[in-house]
Image (cartoon, rainbow, N blue to C red):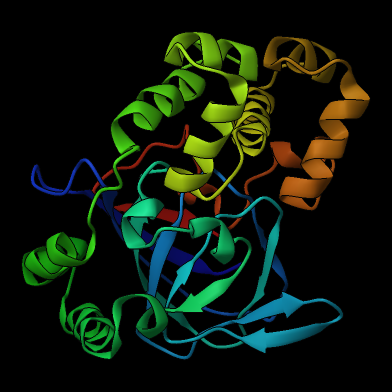
Length: 275
């Protein structure tokens, strides 16, 4: 296991409606495949060193230096043999639509940033990431550029309220979302895809998975977790853990390298962890 350093800085007031914050992760590589679970949010990734390999079917593909990781609805598996040094811009779940009209086309894909923002803005953001000494410094350098390239989609306001209700457990299903929005389930689904790039059903399952994951890490019994999180039974929970985390619920009790990325984890300005 290698020593890792993770720093997170919330976005400033001018960007807070679109960006959750900026993080920096540095750690040694040991060539062991590592899993990242979806959490409903997309991130702009800016590698300051050689990018890791990403599992692509039965093989491995090198990630771009600067890219958007589109909306995930499955586990992502990475392998890093050398040191990892990466800056991430974490978008709110409802904000990936600020980058394009059809974010669902980016689902489960690492899309080169130049294809979305253009060559110059992409180059600028990568330069800022490689120049800045901290997430605060990066935001100071890149704030104006990010404000220009992230144009909020028209559906953001209504979808934001629905996403926050799902995250907080205020509603747990599609019918509840439709009732809250005062519209049909079909319309809610279209709005989610436009703003988040994922279906409302995907988002419901992902947030339910994270409620279960956090409860398991807190030490609750699996049968109790399944019921409290909203699963029909433990078998359905296990199915979601395999899809989203690549593991069964039992190993989820143990610390994992990318736990710091997930909802429910403490995001201090600076966190050190063993990975």
